[in-house]
Amino acid sequence: MSNFFTNQIKTSYRTLPGVITNILRESILAGELSGGVQLKQEELATKFGVSMSALREALKSLEAEGLVRFYPNRGAVVTELSAVEAQEIFDIRLFLELGALELAIPNLTKTVLAEADAILKRADEEINSNRSSELNWQFHEILYRSANRPKLLSLIQNLHNNVERYMRLYLTTLHYQTKSQEEHYALLDACTRGNIKGAQKVLRKHMADASSNLTEYLS
Image (cartoon, rainbow, N blue to C red; front, top):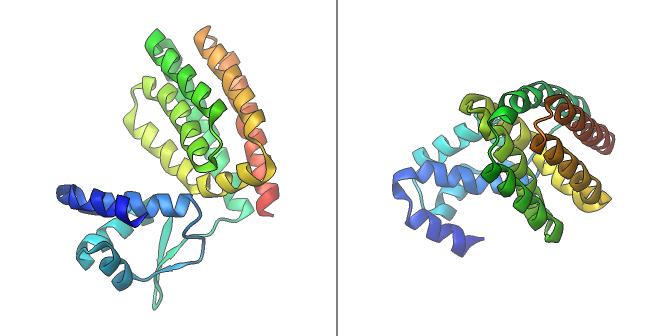
């Protein structure tokens, strides 16, 4: 990780806090920084070769996303997610993503649908769980982006990230990927036909399955 990200930092000084945010976010989502881990700011600033102010700005961004929490006398700590919290996040996501689909489907072009299909085909061949999870988000994102509601998409992505680290672990250990892909193809088919109600029905089942399995896993 160090060489790749060090090069990123060296070439991205103007957005340094953003680069650090991306590095730490991915470490959290990949499970390298697990829930409850204290993020020692001086050590991280030294590791990345950045100022404390740049590091704090990055941590504040992660706090806004719900991935980090600040505690008195402990500083920044990676958040942990309970089964109840996971269920609530999925409930909120369902409302938002159903709405995003309804807004997006009338705007979907052949180009967007072809890109979504290409993402699913790459996911079919992917064996790395982290990369599979990234492709999962890319598929949903490319559909929702056609809603032309950037604030809505940002809210969905933040909520997605809050359960993503656990979903990656779940997909790896319980082999959920095959079923998830089947539901993705069904969703894409409904979108291609312009069937809003059908697409929403598929999405409800897709998210209900993920929510049920993940909350059971966390319990």
